[in-house]
Image (cartoon, rainbow, N blue to C red):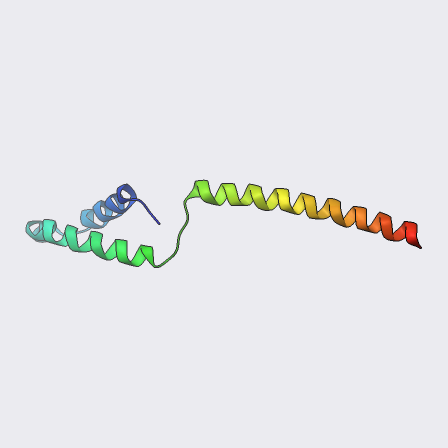
Length: 81
């Protein structure tokens, strides 16, 4: 999930798009927008970049081990034939 700092930045960007006439309701809008963003983004099941990179490395190592095992299996099958 996204952290509060990221949500705050998104909220600020959206607030900057508000016309000047609506600036007096900004604080109320801010609170509601943050709540809405948190709810919607939590449903997306996002992972951090760090977690993604960790899982990519795990997958890479697993793939390399699988290829090595397939190679050994091929060698053993050839010896049996």
